[in-house]
Image (cartoon, rainbow over all chains, first blue to last red; front, side, top):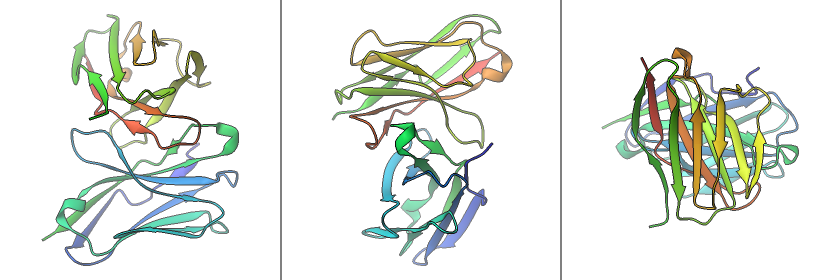
Length: 113
Length: 112
């Protein structure tokens, strides 16, 4: 039972263009969502998060959008840079889960120069 | 720099031979987690400690145990590794509930 799904295993984008990474979830009780970035041979690092009371959160080149009715969130990276090439994980949590995160399988982003 | 350290980075063990993976943190965080990540899959939480309180996930096999002797260290013990236990094992920490988790680089376990 996969509660958080990232249906695109990989995405390739030209440098300077927008990267859009998508994530769907099935449990409407999730109320906090995060994106993590992972480089090879390193652990995941926190990128950006959003609470379910918001529909958008922005941090520099990174914006996360949340559509609760569709149970969908997306991460936009504008403009994309070669250094953004990594695996991006979507994660979700709910108050009842305390500090537990449920992760998606990740999307490999390749930014071509 | 404050960080989460995992040793070793690569571990090879034999089928059925007990193995221990180690995690330490300099962040002084209350919560420590162990995740298992198999190739192209989502990291899966095995268990976590909130201070000394151990919280096991319902579907974590009995073969997996954990110890947290103090705030800084947490160990993952696999009593009788099977071929299906080959994976990346990630340790993470957070200060309190619902706060950002900080991950170590992981230990890749190979079972022969």
